[in-house]
Image (cartoon, rainbow, N blue to C red; front, side, top):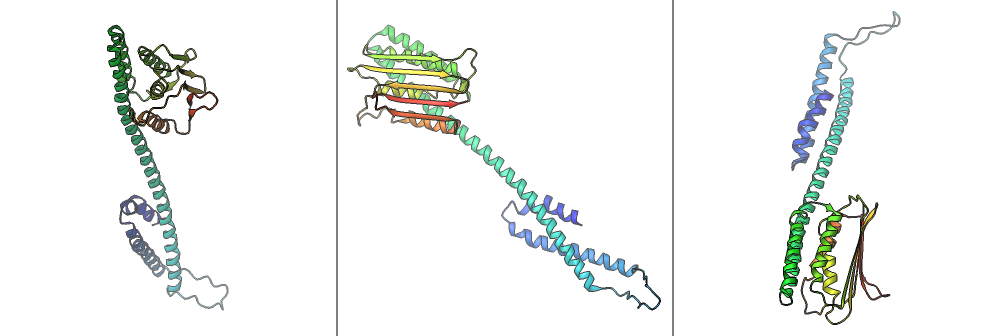
Length: 309
């Protein structure tokens, strides 16, 4: 009877009610079930007692006769004991079922969180690509007025960059070396329209046979930002980009001169940096550091991202 009550609760009563909107129905259903089982057990015991009463074993001849009348008080006490045992069984079934239910809910929550992050990353990629393409097309447009040959070369480089974005950007992670080549090509494209007063240095340090991977297009917004805010048409300007990988971390360090845009300049609207922060929080939460701002000692704008492997 204890097994019957346990499995009725574990397999039928609790799944139908406790995980839905009718949780309170569990109490009356189990109360009726426990009373019914206890009454059934009591009737069986009463029948057994009546049919075959316990034998008498008097200690001596003068001992009083044992009564063979059914003891209803004893039956009531047994009824209470059985009811308590069955309540304990119901509590065990409830604990096990709720533990399983909580585990399933946590699993579903984690799956929903992963799906939400994937959707968020896909949305961010869709935002990154047009933003990057718009800036690059503006650069090529400017080159057409300077040199058609340099504009043609820029279009070829742009096609290579778009190929990277179309094929590599669709994966969750890409080789760090591939991303470095992408950034290097982008810098070469930007340098085509730079004035002689602009100095651009790119330093890439990747160990041989390095298999480090990184989120695609993670650093390109920082590089764009360096060209946007670090270049002046009249004053000496400098941009330094350092990309490095070690056994324990990936590092992107960008330094540039700082020429703040006026309040009337709304190009970009800061979308790039917001995307960088969102992607870092989504992919590398707890495994990255990002410091950025103007260094008071040299007056340069520093932006450094360190990703822990």
